[in-house]
Length: 325
Ligand SMILES: [Mn+2]
Image 1: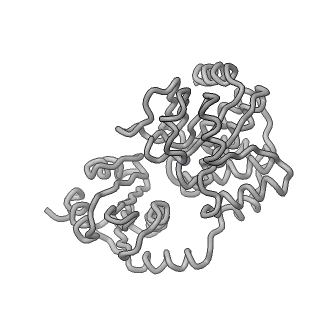
Image 2 (image 1 turned 90 degrees about the vertical axis):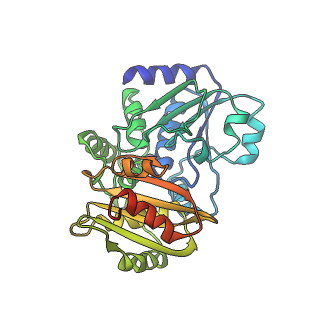
């Protein structure tokens, strides 16, 4: 474990600038782990930057940045314009919270930059970023934040309370409130973040959502149903949804009696239907999603199917689940 951090440190030391980049539509784990790594890089007296792909449409990101501002924490965020300029300098790039090329917030990354490191907690796939200096994937960790906290802890670096708050919220999001992928170390990390001053009230504010979105989700949940004795299914309408919206519904479905696994099917773009799958632990949804060309973890997985017919995709899923033969 410590060995890999030593290797990452060596790479950071070799560079003047390091850019941190995450997946499209950064969530609290992406933001929290990026900020943690930012503090680590700064501690080596190197210039650190966090790439942001779309602030305008990302409320979570907006709220996190506001929280940092309110506490006078300066972080150098960059966007496409600076990335293009940086490509001539060949800085070190560290990707956190994804290892998939297709999910990168900056799509030209692998064309423009040569020195890449990946730190992630998701299972490798066919789309895993190739030709990196180092790829460190720990599926045993709940979140990228849990991995990065360990690195921070090894180096004995202190973080500001508001960064600890964002990190704690990141772990909470990725574990569905400490229910999935949660191990003793996850709680230890959460405890350490609280000791570093993470604020539960501020954390709840970060996790709050818009009432309209909540109500809309409840309508779909109302229409969801059991497909066998322990699995629930939610069918979206013909509109296009963000992948995380499908995931939120699947997560919500796990709260109900008898539901051990849940699936939400909906359009994620024109002609592409996504299935978001969640499990409380026993049923391996990754295995099921893999049969449909997707992937993920045992407890959270997804797939994307090129199709224009929600019912057709539902049939495919039910066949894989052997609910229908
Ligand atoms: Mn994550």
